Image (cartoon, rainbow, N blue to C red; front, side):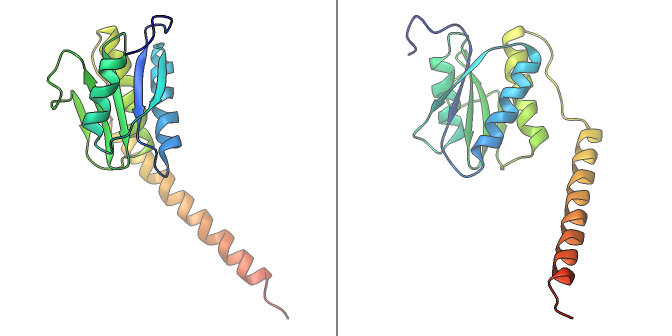
Length: 149
């Protein structure tokens, strides 16, 4: 449990892995946009359900987010430990991670959850395609620039 001096907030329990900083940043951004405070704590378990349960138990608000290499999970201390409210069973995308932040905060606020829109998914796909195109062009320019004439 948390010491008494810790203010009520959502706990984010993270199993350290490559890329976890980006996931944390997006989840935090979603919570910040909803105006709900959070704290990040390390977790020893790779299982996101166990991580979110640990976080929910540690949170004075009773809401926790688990972040692991294989996904994310949102849990509340009012649900059974093995039955998270939201579960992402793949690494996910920037939009997925931010959406988890929104929805954890909205759980605290008691307002309807956000769904990831098809438009957001389409924009993310367009951004990925644009990134790949720019990367290919830059690589081509670098290859051509390094040729000796």
